[in-house]
Length: 135
Image 1 (cartoon, rainbow, N blue to C red):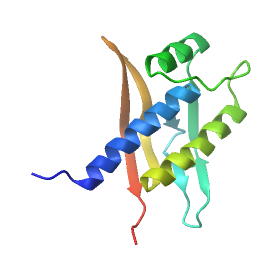
Image 2 (tube, rainbow, N blue to C red; image 1 turned 60 degrees about the vertical axis):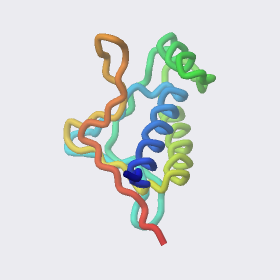
Image 3 (cartoon, helix red, strand yellow; image 1 turned 45 degrees about the vertical axis):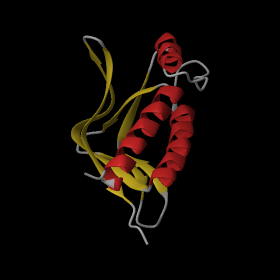
């Protein structure tokens, strides 16, 4: 049985996105209301549309980054638009590296971390991934 290269690519993308979120201290990305998008428009612009970003508390950010062997991207005080923009710029590079066009988050979607009995679980509930066309 051979591995499906798309599955391998999606697994690598999910791992890279999770690592990026931890490094930047992003706990969750959720849609505002009806849905949102993080990715390329048809004209090729990388955008965030109708999304809310939640950040880890500083101590949680340091602990999560340490658990993955990462140096956390520092934040100056309360997290805001500059932190979102830094994450989005870095996400664009991850998308490029893995051939991802966009993530669409439907109503009630969660991209991020959910606490569980044995730790935090990375979830992609209600998230649709669009890959770039090859060729």
